[in-house]
Length: 266
Ligand SMILES: C[S@@+](CC[C@H](N)C(=O)[O-])C[C@H]1O[C@@H](n2cnc3c(N)ncnc32)[C@H](O)[C@@H]1O
Image (cartoon, rainbow, N blue to C red; front, side, top):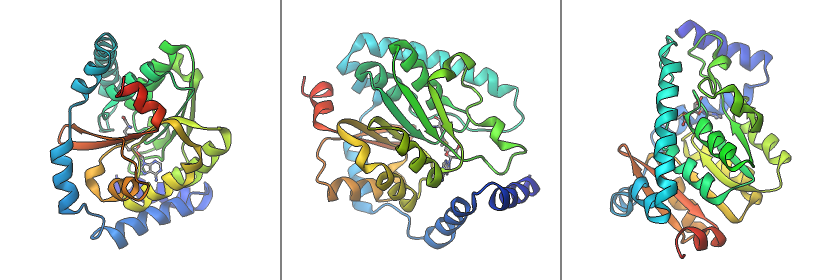
């Protein structure tokens, strides 16, 4: 397995233009691994503020919450069936019930996500867009170098019939996000689930900052990893923030005023 990792890394650095993405990953791991941590104060805040996704969505629209539960179960079962045929462990999905619900409820035209892996969040988002009969998903990912021919596993659980509303970029966030940004006028829903380092998050948010509006929702996974989420919302004085707990991890969600009106102050 290690030999695939070395071979894939060298091939992608030398021939596929991934030099800067790989250097930045190595730099983040080596230089910042000791400082990339959450402060005690923010950790306490997470524990105190977190709520469950199911009670949040149920409180907004119980009928849609029921549909979400059914769809998410279907996605889980289908995904598991596909992944059982694969020798490698590609990992499970995150909080894709929240994504499904928000896409169905808010009916976005443009959804952007980072971090696809086997594709649970992509599958859920595309299923919701299909049900809405509108909207596009733009996804950014980077292959797992520890696998042979890793590109084939990206989004492997996503059914063919849903791919017509999907644009998948696999050159890493540093190349993908500027490319995606040049294709769209705004982002309605953004889900960040790729490079969890402080610098990775900072790069992504600064590349897309100008595409967010008062109609945008931003969801960031694993905010317990470091202080990025807290620094970002405090610096910008963003008050409409919701924290979710999901299997011992935390997600941060913040939104523009128009979304707050629809989701919270109804
Ligand atoms: C936690 S997984 C994503 C899970 C996915 N959202 C789901 O629900 O199934 C993280 C993914 O981010 C990708 N990734 C890590 N660093 C990246 C980067 N710098 N640019 C793009 N993708 C990256 C990994 O290769 C992996 O596929």
